[in-house]
Image (cartoon, rainbow, N blue to C red; front, side, top):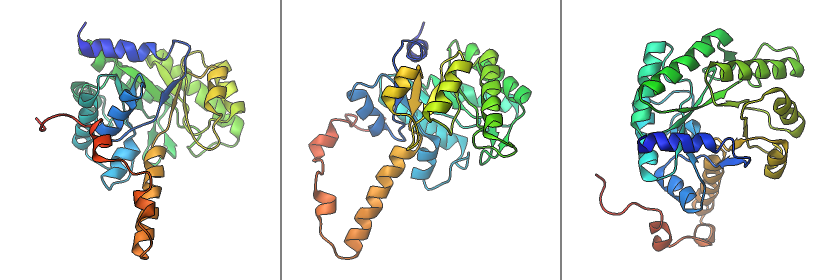
Length: 281
């Protein structure tokens, strides 16, 4: 088993060891190195944070080549497993999807988030179609000899066309169980993380579950007690830092003080702890 295959198995095991896998999603190598240095056992990227940091909207608005380069820089920058938010795979065809998955594995990533919706998540793919796409992802990874950890998103909480909250929950459960049967390792019912909903999902879905952290999500200790396996932060850490940067710009623009920039600032030596040595190869 090569090193990448071992990392994939490590990532998979982190979903079933009884501990909540906490993934504060990153968008660049220094963020990934910081997580590794602080003892996080794996790193996850956020597609929205990567795209927005480059000046584009989420939703596959950047080229797949651009996304692969960003993921590759992150994966090469750390020794822990990296799972990539790969949106909907950047292709509507199974052939194109498998080609993109092959390229993703070439970056060194060993896991993916894989969406079941179109564009802005308002429309969902039919379940049989998404099942075939998950099978295609698994086949592409198997050909590489790597158990790619597939975190299958179920976007029912975002989509249109549901008449009640109960109907959305039932759709999430149906989709999640179908995706696991098709070869996914974890399900990601993104958009709802309150304690009541999470308990229902935990009771009805036997596989590992990923919850998105938000202001309304059950706290980390509660998620651990309920038996949730994984929690991620999506683009929220990036956007929180962006808000702080905007406040700095506003302060200096009105000829305010320097304190908003200099208070608590790191030195160059502090930053150096998370940088690669030498020149870029």
